[in-house]
Length: 311
Image (cartoon, rainbow, N blue to C red; front, side, top):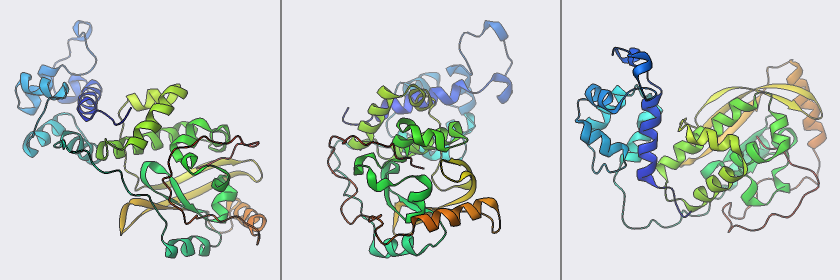
């Protein structure tokens, strides 16, 4: 598949959001067993949005052209969309250029960011780019999440690792939550860049190889990358870790995010991080933020003896 079908994505997103609403959620009578579809009917949603049934039906069929901001806002209100979902709807319903976009330029890590990553002593940190590709990391991130440097560049991808790497599945104590996060983030990116061929290839590969990915992708849940919270990990060497994380967007490239992890001072997790840092501090440590482009042409992945885990 060369690219995602933006019109099909719009229709599927609208249907998925309509299906999650119950009549009583929006003040409509519930006819119980007489309803033949989950959620609201198209007629009910169109009435709530103040548009004709025929017009809304065309939108769900992917035939909407030049939809006004007012109509999109009315539909978003009727569907009870949050801010992230509204932005996703706007991307999907936006005008589609007939001119094929140029392939996005290869992502690179600025030298200053490489220096910053290595200077973050005691803080696991990595840099995420388009499609949630890992394009830079420091030594402690490699010690905690697995050495990305042992993987071919095209396999350094958070979504791919979460679903296809057994070590990553074991690393996350809340794997289901992490799986939902990475798929929701990828959905948000897909709405903005539906003609990204490498994105389409990634989605196609994961859909074929992992049933849980197919289920989550079909749910059309979207989430922004800019988050913070706590991750619980089951590290194979130091046991359980509870780490707070912060996701920071870079001011000069909104497609890149710096993700950092830390533990409260004096906590068992902080002690475990210090232990991992001492083990990973080696003058022979591999280059962790390669200078070469992070978007090489696809290539066959060489076998590896030990699966490398990733965040």
